[in-house]
Image (cartoon, rainbow, N blue to C red):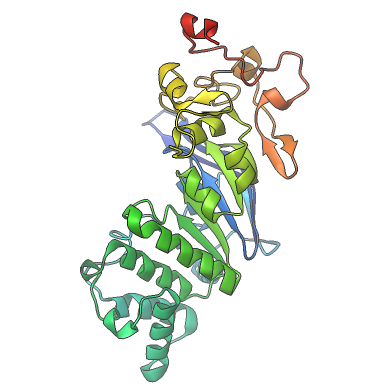
Length: 350
C-alpha cells in the first residue's frame, strides 16, 4: 500500500550564516502491506516519529519518494492533501493532547465524518457515530458520545482518537507510539484493538515504538532505527529472538526477561551492558559520526566501522543488517569479540 524509498529529512538549525542541519532521517526504506503491521523500533531521538510525520505528509521530504498504491504520493495543495489523508491517517502518541478538551466526543467525530464522508445529518450521522464507537469497543455508544475528553480514561481517549482516524475509512494507519502514554494495564487492550482492525478491515499499520517486546507481540515485521538510519530489518520473531546487529542485541538485552534472568543475548548480559561502558547517549545528529553511526557505542567496532557506512547485508531469509560483520571484508569486525569498553579483568574472565 505505502512504499518509502530513500526517506530523508534534514532540519536546518543555527542563525544567520550557519548552514548546519539535523540529520533526523537518512535514506530509510519502508514497505507497508495491506493487512499487516510493520514496527519501527528505536530509542528516543532515532527518527521514528519523524518517519511517521513524513509518511503522513505533515513534513516535507528533504529527499526520497513515497508511493501510495504504486503512485507518487507527494501532495500539492489543500485538495490533494485531503485526498491523501482520507487514505492515510495518523494516531498520535498523546491521547491527552490530541483531543480538543473543550469539545465533546460527538463534535470530534462529527467533524471527521463530515470532512471525509460528506455532510451527514440526523439519523445517518447518529448511526455513523455509533458505528465508529462500536468499532473501537466503546459501548454502549450513548455512554461516551456526549462526554468530554477529561471525563474519559487514557485508554478510552486513545480509542476515541482511533475512531476519529477510522472515520476516513483509511487504508493505512500510522500509529506513533499509541500506547506509551497509557497505563501498562490497558496497553494490551489498545494493541488488541489495532490487531482486530487490521484483521477485519485489512488496514496496513505502521507501529512506532521504543518497546521491542511489544513489536514482537503485535507486528509482522520489524525495522530497527538508530540515529536516523536503518540498522536491521526482518520478521518480528527472528529480529527479537535472534538479533543480528549489535544495537538490536543491546535493545533486546536491555528488556527484562523473567524466563532468563541473568542470561545473555548475543554474548551480552544486562550487567555487561551496564558495566562495559557501551550505554551512553546517541550521537549528535547535527554532526553525526562517520561510518556506522552506532560505532561510538558498539563493543565490537573496528577501524572499518569508523570509516565507512555499512550497507544492509543479507543475514537470513527476508532479513538484513547494516553491520560490516556480515560482509566479506577481511578487516570486518567479529560479533562476540569485544574491542571497546571492556575492563582488563573482564577479558580474562571465562
